[in-house]
Every structure is written in C-alpha cells, then in structure tokens.
Length: 270
Image (cartoon, rainbow, N blue to C red; front, side, top):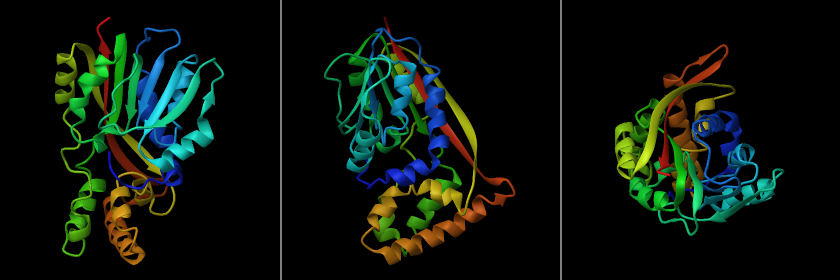
C-alpha cells in the first residue's frame, strides 16, 4: 500500500458517504459457512466500517488489518473489543501487498483499499486459497481515476512547478482494472463471481467540499510529499482548489460529486 501519512479525522469527515458502498457490498455477500465466521477486513482504516461486519454477523471474530499506525490507533481506541453478539472485533498491522491467511477464513473483505496495492489481482489466489469452502472474497474500489477529481490532480502534479516533487507519488490510471478483468480472474480461480459498478451522486456541503473529500483519500500522497514544506503544500492546494471549483460548481443545495465504484463478490466452491 501507499506510504502516505493518513489522517483519520480528515477521512471520517465524509464517513456517511464513504460507508454506503461498503453497506451495498455486504448486501450482496451470501450466507457464510460458519455460524460464528472468521472475517478479515483488509485496509480497515479507522474501523468505522469494519464495525458493520459485526452487525451482519454478530458472532463473528473480525480482524481489521491496515499498515497505517494512525488509522490503527483510531480503530483500537474506538472499536476494538467483544461484540454484543458474542463475537470479537480486533485490529492488527499488516501490508495488503504481502498478507496471506494464516487460518481458514469465511470472508475476506476490502473496502476502498486495493486501488493502493499494485498487482493486487496477483493476491487473489492466496486469499481464495485461505477461504473455507463456500467462503467469499468481497471488495469495492473507486473506479473513477479518469474523473476530474483525479485527472486535474495528476495534470497539476505534472506541471513544471510540481513535477519533480509530485509526478511520481499519485495513483496511476492502471491502479484499478476493468470489471471484465476482475470477473475473469476470479472465475478462473473457481469462484462464482458477481461484478458490478455503481455511480453515486454525493451531495456535499460546506466550503470547497470536493477538496475536503479528496484531502482524506486520493490527495494523501501529495500532502505527505509536501509535509516538510507547508508553504508549497498550501500553494499546491490553492491551485488544485481553483481547478476543482470549476470542475464541480456549487448549487444552492450543495456540490455534486459523481463517484463511480466497482464491486466484486467471489464465492469459493463449496
């Protein structure tokens, strides 16, 4: 995953909008093999959506994995411990690029993380091998790397003023694959696979809300690269803010951010 420094507080400023795709993903996950399933959440962040797993499967032992100390600190503090249904929620450090199941899992999920993991499709075989028969791999990723939100960021980072510091730190256009590529890979691994896309029209409030949104996610590598130079950081943000204002004009009811996401649920043969 990226070496960016993450800010749980900034990320959670749009927690409701960010949680909805995970809720939609879980709605398509079928019943799991065990009554008290073992579940892994890869890239759990501050744990606010990991909690939703314990509501769907109250007796589950759920472990959220992340490589951000800041995110894990927030998750430990706010969410770790026994659950009302007799299960347990805990968190542990791990790098999704190398993580492999050390015990059988009933469900492995990932919410808006794999876009940060180069070569993530190569990990699918190990993850599915670690599932019990009838278990599932389920994930969603942002599928909007061509949207103005990201295109303008990359274009600005590639200008003469910023190229030397930022051109190589942002996500590239191949960070997420086509729906057909995911379907083919997972089906060839012997899974009954469901892949789909959804475009959400998030109505955001406040001053420069699209900039505020992206400061919690896609902009983190740039903010990390400029962290030692606050003047340069603020200058970059000002230029990017002006571009976003043109691309996402405000309306009397708020600012609309169209956001396409890709979902996959792959069920291992029972």
